[in-house]
Image (cartoon, rainbow, N blue to C red; front, side):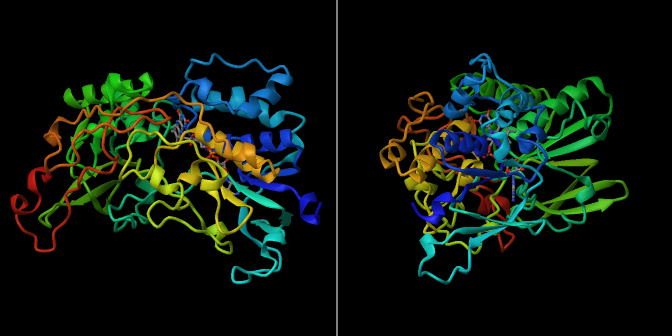
Length: 471
Ligand SMILES: Cc1cc2nc3c(=O)[nH]c(=O)nc-3n(C[C@H](O)[C@H](O)[C@H](O)COP(=O)(O)OP(=O)(O)OC[C@H]3O[C@@H](n4cnc5c(N)ncnc54)[C@H](O)[C@@H]3O)c2cc1C
């Protein structure tokens, strides 16, 4: 046994996946310290506590956590019920964090600022793998670790509104008009939306959730207006698989949204690439640039940016990471989850081998492991940490025996987008993807495979540049 083995494995983040890692470490008898920036477990989940998950309880509880909780007399929720984010915390994460075996290892108000190797910068190789990790917190405190399991998620680094991946012109100055994804429209944040005009930007489930809440608010609150802006020419991706969705709740979300749009209760703007934000008195003009170079503005009271999330790797810049240039995930994992290729939300089982970096002993897991891919599921993260912890315990057979306890999805071949014309010039034809494990959406082709209407340098007329998908 080396001196390194007496050091704890440091887990960053006490979200669902970080706490699952702590449960597996406890079961394996490995010393562990969980560093959580917030003041309680599941702080990111609490932010969207009013939202219903689309996966039922049976997929939301880590097996090691379940065993520890059961030993303590915990009664598991109905496996088929769909919890809200708040219930995920109150009925599962909070009791887990309170277990006597885990609680002493959790440290709140502990935000990790940087990770390195003690006495070695990124350049130095000799002795690297046997040198402890050095973890620095924002309060200046430092600690040593034998390994780091980074489950810090992506909630605190949302994507920008600007279509190019950079903030739109004026986006920073217009911050007072901007909402993070998933405001509590019908609850705590109601006053900011009632009787006002809100623009929701984005095409994912977060956008759909917010739009449905705004439509409900508008039904009972005169003067409430809802506009929805997407970059593609069709909202079919958001409408999803309907009845073909492996998760009925998720399919129903898209179907209800479609009804509101068809009935005119939600105004839909397609081909909408945000170029600039210009505050005007107490409203904000959102400027879109069209394919021909012309600009148009929509003036609203609030903007909800539901444009997804990206990982923040800045805490690990002194470590040797090998990140896929597209996804910001490991190179082994990236091709399995790239939304340019995949849409079904399915993924082959994967573990320590796919999550390893050249920096031995550092693993990004959970939501962060997926980089910019939007299809992460907790069950996938639970299997990741089971495998990583088994490897840290030296049990390589278990580490490499990766399983994923999700339903077989069958094929994923129902494309509800009738505007694509069967895949001629507007995206791939709806071909069957092979069966995977996950929670298929029923939409074929890559989530990002639909072409966008791009701005042309020559400002040529639309008909000459965009083909059948342009506006
Ligand atoms: C609205 C919404 C609905 C979702 N619905 C589902 C669903 O139905 N089913 C499903 O399987 N998945 C769902 N997901 C996806 C995913 O499972 C969740 O986002 C889940 O919370 C990810 O868990 P995590 O532990 O990886 O990250 P998080 O839950 O984001 O936890 C990360 C933790 O790390 C902490 N942290 C961050 N930075 C630092 C730092 N520098 N130092 C210390 N601590 C830090 C944060 O405070 C946070 O507590 C949903 C996601 C969203 C946003």
